[in-house]
Length: 393
Image (tube, rainbow, N blue to C red; front, side):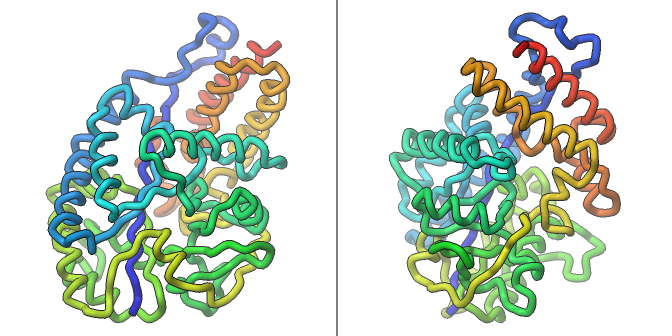
């Protein structure tokens, strides 16, 4: 009797202002690194197309199913800051969902950062603690499950997460670690006591990426067809993990995505051996069936499903190393405002925009990027890092 674990990542980055080399050292003491106008416009657009209608729909589906329809969320700190500043009613709608008892909250880094890839894990731990404080304040809840930025995972990260007291962690169900095995079970790391929930990327991406692709052989995807596919899956657990913006933003209302989501619970319930669980319930219900050894980091991003999404070229590596080195100097100075600015610059999206990948991966990167190309993103980001560096001296 496989359970369906539906999890949504909710995130909005702080996009940067255009910052030329001539601005370095010449701006006001509080330079405007972030494009407030653009960020507000994008947030409000996505809120109206996705967050508000999807939250309303989920609340209705939970109530109509008497709580049998269950979902899980992770909310980044930057997303919550947008809500607090521009649309606090969205936070209220997430609270209403959580109060149903059919919704679970997941921990992650506050700034959606790549801090887990730093040589030392202290910055990663600090950002996780900031996120934990935020969730406690908003929902009076302490999550048991952790999801790292973009599901980045390796043995070292697993050990740190286990040491911080979490019961489970989410990552990608890639063949790189599974080989012949199925993602539809829990696994455990080789070096600690932690349960691993692996994304079924085929079924997840059928909705997240292929839903509105008219050339896809299975187009159109109906809730009936999707439930039938899941019913034919073997295993304990079908993990459907995707960006929340899938609904209404990546796939517009006109594609039928809301009708699909609205019909999904009833179609699933027609198969008596299927049910929905939250991530915490999945970890409590099932036991690991084996171990996975992940010496090198994987993620749920791009076809490579590793960290080449952010560190795949020399420009990205230069940005990452400059960012790391700035942190050491900032911590010594202990300027809280500058540390906060540095942490906002750690958001993984900034390096995502600098990717030079081609084919389908490149098209997805270009879709999200506010720049004309990766080289523009690199120059702009490095200029800002150099300006911040000068302010330290």
